[in-house]
Image (cartoon, rainbow, N blue to C red; front, side):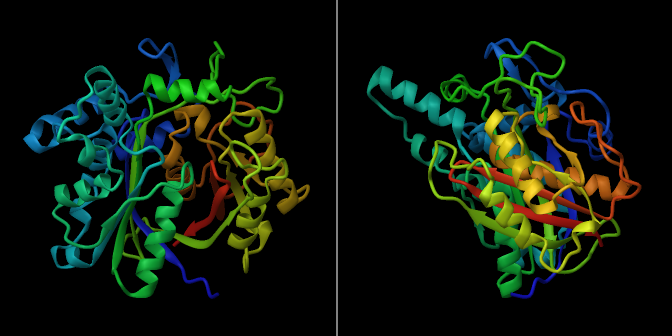
Length: 383
């Protein structure tokens, strides 16, 4: 299969680091984590800063029909609105939308179910507001886009699968460009309890509560975060700041554990090798890992990296120690960090690894993998 290049021409995000593109860019490269003790949940989390939360509140209040939307849909709207000005009116019918999410309408679903258990009744808004597909459809409604729109969940690799979907639609000629994204709002007591039930949530009380890529940790340190990312994807370069997706791969494992990730990281090995076909491994200067801060997840990815690169493993970067694990959106947060590294020719601070800094950033490999053992890998280069 011939791999045609695709271009991420613009991106936007809303996250614990903010949503202004310039300040967001700077924040990736400092030594600070956004993870703080959440008084409501009693654990560390990556919660939106106050200015971003105000944006979400204003969107909810702006129209009566937004009153019942889940926070995940509002996050997606906030991120996607920033890209509206980059789409020509003539291209609207040919612009598809795929906003992914691992959990979908987490808050609304949980609140609706609590209400049902308490009263035995469900409101008329429950079903439409808890359907996963309502994320992309509400973004389309908000932007006034009339092209194809759909949502999906492939757990924590959902965002990068959205990018693959957009590439497939554009490559088939069915769409001219795609707004691809992911949104996740998992900061609820039940979701945290699920992670604690798996014994993966961090109970660290230190400056870095999520110790992703720390080989010395003795326990799991995953921390949840919320946020959304949107990107404009095309087969053509339409921006001076465009970044090229020059390689892409995907793979899945057999279901052998609750997370379906083998000790060898088989699916990651396969997806990385596929993404690297036709690309010299020596040209990969940075790998942005999925590593969520768990013992098994981190160790599996390190094993996969060794299998692919041997002793010549590139510089390793990670986003989860800084903003937490945003489930389905995490792969796209890796994407925008990769874009910023290529644009700035700079690698971010990493707190747990003693690494030699690369002299340049020519190509960046990034990973995502989720429950079910579904892995996606991308190679980014300057366009």
